[in-house]
Length: 78
Image (cartoon, rainbow, N blue to C red; front, side):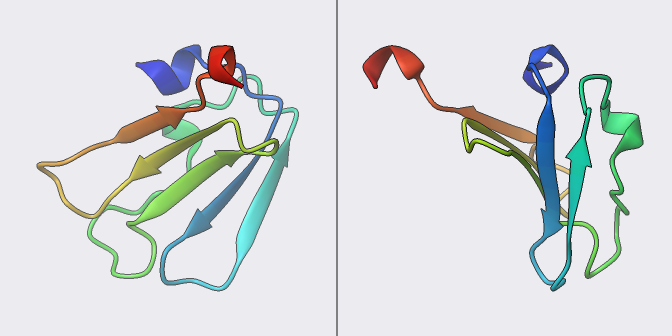
């Protein structure tokens, strides 16, 4: 999975419907099992993990049939 292979130094975790975010520093060993995701919970099931430098984003949704999603900036075109 792309999220596991991605270099993770510092990242922010936030939810679609919650007004709080979490900063993870020293996140190099962060895995999907470590993420504060709660399947089926209205507020905590649409979760975004974003690289501190906005180079990539990982998304887990409330929809069991879709995702997770990973998007990364193509730095060769910058």
